[in-house]
Length: 210
Image (cartoon, rainbow, N blue to C red; front, side, top):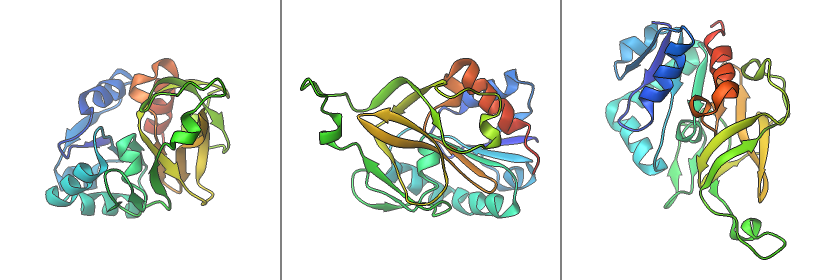
């Protein structure tokens, strides 16, 4: 198997699989630790609440499978909630520890940042298309131009002081929306829903060597 898409009971798994398949990659949805161990690359998607997701990962044994995959050096991609889970902790509906693979915290959009100069309020969740400001040259973004548009759905975002952020967007404030450290890649936006730009990102990931 080229790409293992981790199934822990949450996430838009089929759309991620279809996108990779359309690009010619062998991508399977699995909750089998041996499949994940033997795959050349691993993807952790996710939609929903952080608390529920981290509980599911722990209960299904996927936490250890993820940690083993990352330590092996194979390319690993977290998408949306899958990105958030990779960090130290989240403050969504309480305070919950994450996988602690990447340094940082997941915080809620601040009300003061959502107020526009004319008094109107931006809506939360941040939903729809927005542009990227690339800050690091990383292989995931090869062939893309600054200000490329991608699709978002989220109410919480990454806050980190570590030098791992590879792109930002603006939604009331400047927020980090992708990160990379060694073999681990993470996007707050949904590449599988982001048209040609998203397909290029997935194509780039699929072409990485472990």
